[in-house]
Length: 224
Image 1 (cartoon, rainbow, N blue to C red):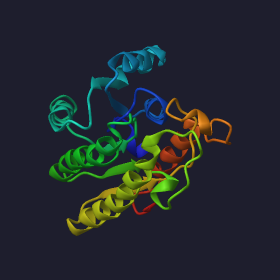
Image 2: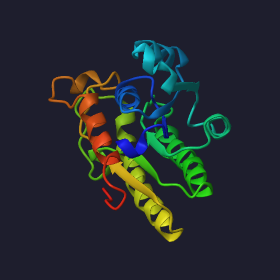
Image 3: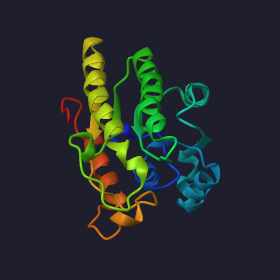
């Protein structure tokens, strides 16, 4: 992770779960982190939980990734205050009404702005999209599971397609930007329906460790 020390990572959905864990680990690795989420109070709590000497590395901002104006304001601030984006990590933090907007359009809005920043500065970068195993096959929901799960696989299949399209786009423009999709199984977060709680689950730290492994690969290594 030495190549990313003092570089800027934007983490969406950073108020809890995988996003919060990734933000913590990136800060510990010496990365400057911009944590975005709707719940500002949770971001403030995240900063308080960091070692005092590391808190200045975490910049927090309230942002709704389903709102283009909110995304633009956040990335404009990153460009103005920190010089641009080097790493983008998109997480899911969904409600019934927002699952489509968050998982698809939120990814598109944030990725477009991150790519723009990286290309303008001709800098190396890495975009990591948090996908899911259901982005590769359709599963049968358990009885009693929430209705938004019916839409969830469709949005994650879209992320699978977007990942490859983004990768081809970055290659066409001859950039130094890598694009990776991480597809975990069931992760024990506050969003998991009760019907799934009895199943074996990954922890947020497991996914965060996988993300840091991908970011630590040399520039010539592409992890799909």
